[in-house]
Image 1 (cartoon, rainbow, N blue to C red):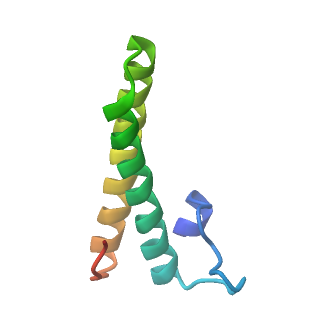
Image 2 (image 1 turned 120 degrees about the vertical axis):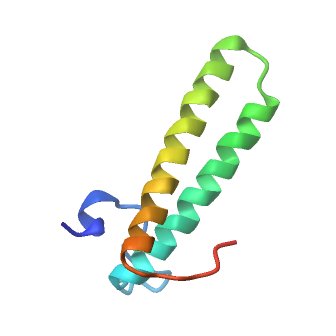
Length: 83
């Protein structure tokens, strides 16, 4: 099954060109990394106990998604520098 069927983060580039499977995966890794960084930032600033719980779940969910995408890249032998 194609990753494009599982994730709909970024199937197209900024010029509406459809991405290759590798480009699609790398783009989604970048998006997942930014989402994970945002989740960590949110966790650092919230003080309400319910929001803290919410942030913990969000961080865990983003970690799992990011790890999944990294593992997919490893299986496809994709090597790239992710910032």
